[in-house]
Structure formats: C-alpha cells, structure tokens
Length: 95
View (cartoon, rainbow, N blue to C red):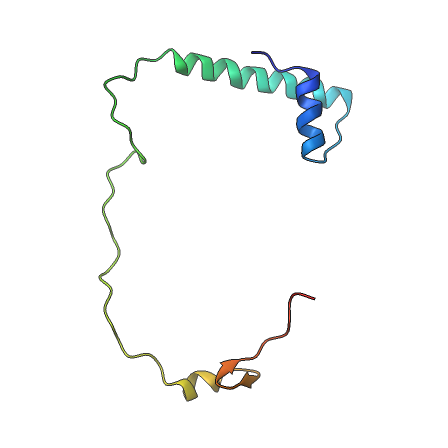
C-alpha cells in the first residue's frame, strides 16, 4: 500500500497542519520508505521468538513499601506561602 498525496493531505488536515507541495512529496517518499521497511520486517520468521516487553530481563528494583512517620504538619506548613485549613493554598489555574 503506497502513500498518496491524498493520504498526506488527510493526515495534515487532521493534525491542522499545512504543507507546501514540496513537503508533501518529501513526506510521501519518507512514509513509503517506512512502509517498505515494515514490509521487510513482516517477512521475518518470528515463530520461535517469545513476546517481550523489553530487550533486557528486568526485575523490580524498587524498595519494599514500609510505613514511616512523615514530617509534622506544622513544619511542612511553615514553608507554605499561604495556607487554608491545614492545606497549601495556591492560585487558581483554571478560569
């Protein structure tokens, strides 16, 4: 399946992008090369290859969760520029 000018224009429209004719031709060439490469990859025999999520074997490197006392609220709130009912008071971001 080859990429056409219409395909590039459709994707550009969906992404709200505008391309010159030269850019469209360049994208057609690049996308077709990508699809050709994918077609080559599809020819590989992967029947004996187990599915993997990562190239290297991974193990959980996180420490165990353990309950520890946190800093006292008064000490934390001393750093707050503004406070309301024991919580940090910050400016509204959404109008």
